[in-house]
Amino acid sequence: MHAPSPEMAQAAAILASGGLVAFPTETVYGLGADAENPAAVARIYAAKGRPQDHPVIMHLAPDADLAYWASEIPPEAQQLAAAFWPGPLTLILKRAANIPDAVSGGQDTVGLRCPSHPVAIALLQAFKGGQGGIAAPSANKFGHVSPTTAEHVRDEFGADGTVALVLDGGQSQVGIESTIVDLSRLDTHGPVLLRPGHISAEAIAAVIDRLPAAPDAQAPRASGTLASHYAPHTPVAMQDTATVRATLAALALAGKKVALIHYSDLDGAAAALRLPAAPDGFAHALYAALRAMDARQADLILVEAPPQDGQWLGVNDRLRRAAHGSVGLVHGLLNANAV
Ligand code: TXA
Ligand code: MG
Image (cartoon, rainbow, N blue to C red; front, side, top):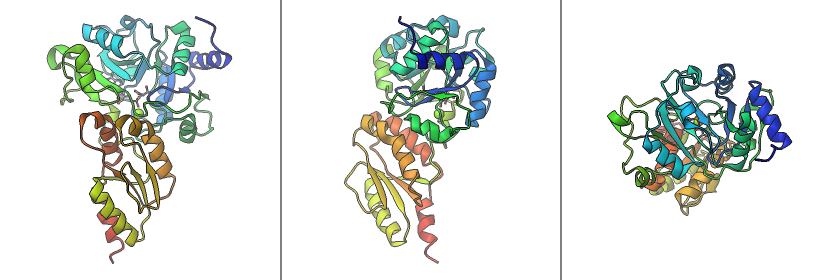
């Protein structure tokens, strides 16, 4: 392995001294800290405004020793890591005794992932000679839209010095957060899909011969699974294509400003962004689109609901949470004018 670049050496030094470094991954940008330094991890929670009992994902270099981080590594974990790492998959495993409580939000599990973005890999290799772990949630304020560019990260945290360095690796390819599979309770619950993503349940089943189940009541908590999450400041509503047409017409008559995110042929919105009509392309562009439409100062961000099929599961999951609480929103906007 060759010597790290000066920027990567600086980033690794910041992490080693307990500071925060934001870095690109193929899913979204992460806000990183030394996973084994509880004070550094506490800084992530403070910067994000994230509740203390929400665990963060630990990012590892491609050749990391899983046994250092997890106390039990079932064959399914080895198979999934071999098939999908480096890549957008997080595995929940039983936590090794030497890993601080603080990074796992007090849970007896750890979330591990080896990202594929070359800048993330270079950072992981520069930090503690590739033997460290970087704890990193998405680099956004708690509950807000995840960042997919370095500029998004700077928009979230400003120049107040909380984040010592933002590494720029261009726009994240995947665009939505990693798929999370819980393998910590295989004997009682089997594999459980905690968060859908680019790597589908079917792709996982093709490797381990078992389709991961939907989360049960005892499944480990995950903040990304809260009803309301990934949300812009402007209210978001999601409707099927025909309803979007009717809503656009009605809200235009009522003098309301609508910012539209769509993939079909639709017009009549004050601002609109048309995304690719396929799940990977839509996911890639989604968070940047939500941020751009949020900046238009509209009364409503209206999203054309994607198809319900399995390939769209990750996108639909994020949109449902971004639009949480939007029931009655369109009626409210119309009735406000009906006095
Ligand atoms: O794609 C991703 O996973 C991105 C990039 C930066 O890698 N990270 C990310 O982190 O989405 P965050 O913190 O925004 O979401 C991590 C999710 C949370 O819902 C968290 O609760 C869950 O992973 N998680 C982490 N460790 C866990 C654990 N031990 N048990 C259950 N859930 C866990
Ligand atoms: Mg997040």
